[in-house]
Each structure stands twice: as C-alpha cells, then as structure tokens.
Image (tube, rainbow, N blue to C red; front, top):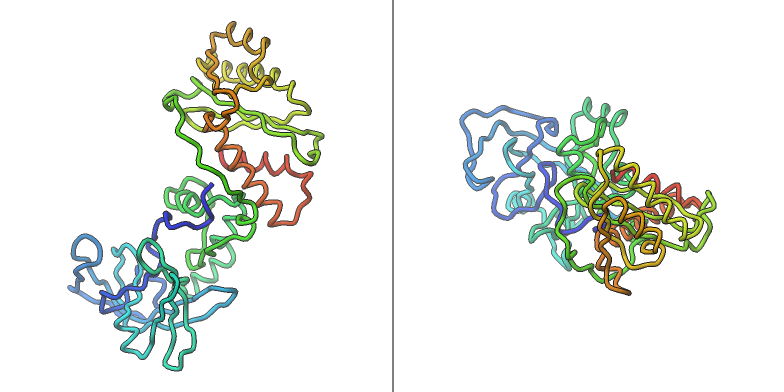
Length: 356
C-alpha cells in the first residue's frame, strides 16, 4: 500500500497552491466567500487550458492546519473562478500586502510583516501545496459539523486506506453517504500508517497476464503462523483473490493442512456463483497448497494449477501484494486504537470487507 500521502496523489479543486504567475488569488468555491460581488464579462488567461470566466470577487478566509496548529489568514480581492482546476494564492499579491515566503527543504513558510508565521506549504509535484482550506460560510460549516467528517476521519474509518483511493471513492461517488468536510485539511502523515509499514523489495510483474473474466482464475496463498493466537484460536489465514476483479476472500486456519478443505470449499462457491469451476489456480509451491489431494481435486474439476518456482513466493505477485497490504491495514488499525494483537483476525476481516 502506498504511503498515506505521496507525490502521486492528485490535486483537487479545493486544494490551495502557492503561485508566482497569477496576479490575483483564485478560489473555486462560492461558499468560501465572506464578502462577494458578482462580475460580468471578465475572464482569465493561463488558468486551465483556455480562457476561464471570472464570475465574481470578494474576501476568503483560509484555515491553515499543520504541526498541531490552526491559523487563519484573510485573502482580499480574491477572484471566484469555478472552472479553475484548483485554488491559487498569488505570491505577487501576498508580497504586495507585506507578506513574505521562505523556502527550505521542500517546505514553504508564509509570514507577515513582523515575520509571524501565517501558514505552511509542502512541495508536491514541483508545486507548493498549502496546508490550508477555505473556511466555508457559516451555514455550510454548521451543516458540515453535524453530518460530515474530515478526510482524516474517513481515512481511519476505511481501515487507513491511501488518500488517493479515498479521493477516488469521493470523486466517483462509489460509496453511499460518504460525506466529507471539504474544508478540512488532510494530514500529510498518519503515525499509525508509518508504524505499520515495513521496508520491502518491489515484487516483479506476474508472468501470467490478468484474466478478463471473473471466476476464471484465482490466486491463493497461506500466511502465518501469527506470533499470537487470534481471538478465534487461529494461527494462519488463506487468501483467495479473483484475478480479474481483485475480489478478496480471507479464511482463517488453525493449521496449514486445513488449506485443502478451504480450497475445495472456495471452488464450490465459485461454481455456484458462476455456474462452472475456475480454469486456473495460481499458488506458490508450498506443500499445504500443492499436495496429492489438491492435485487430484483440481484434475477432477478441470483446473490447471499454476505454481511459482521453488522458494520464489514473490512470483505469486498478486497474493504477496495483498498479504503485505492487508498486514499494513490491520497493523495501522490496531495501532491507531491501541487494541490488543489477538483481535488481528477481526481487523483482517474488516479490512478485507472494506477493500472489496
């Protein structure tokens, strides 16, 4: 799983960038203006791919959140440009008002005439993104407080998934009732995610191409033994991942030898769902997955077993990647809420459900 925030994440319309080219501050949200005056017939060049319309201008209040601090700064003579790809704080206008910006180590500091800190930004995709959101109107803010949650809270609720994935869920309306307070500022780091991550070498691309038909091929792997016994008495889990849809199934085991019965059960469910047995099963060369019983069963069902080279589990890339991702999500959840390790299986089931 990618870091909670990375340089690959997109820049949204409500993000604020420090810009040295524009001569005016630009905001994309009408509800952000505390004072507003409509404008007719005005346009801008250089914001977006073509000339964009200026609908109005007024005053916007920025709320900076960083290093445990909350600071407010007012931007006057801000243009309302709803078609702009993002919000811009004009470096020229900020300088004209007596402010100054200092850059060091990929961080920018916004300061007033007395060098008091007003805000902070971070280098992102060769730009400087501010740790700020526009404060919305009072009516909108009151509604947000009662029905909407911050980006960080949704990150935790969805088992610490990456911000890029969370933005996609929100942007494409993939989840009902995912109401996000757009005025909130996502944290750049999540301590639980940092502690949960482990250094690793990247897995190579799989030799087999991805199937296009759901239920045609699944990959499987056994993880364990766990250092502690799960609340259900388990020591291992076996994962089944549909190669086409990436739908995940996690089942828990007391001992590795139980894998054979779980494989048979999983194939039976696939036959019931798709009306036929899968054509391929990709696993590593472990004896718990490739034994005489499994081979006989697969032959009877017409399933081709695809195995990796001995002692090369990384060739089973999808399953290995899933295991690593699941481990990070589970550890992050347990760390964030200071929960005991024996609840690991409950957290794993929850994380798998959310991923699907």
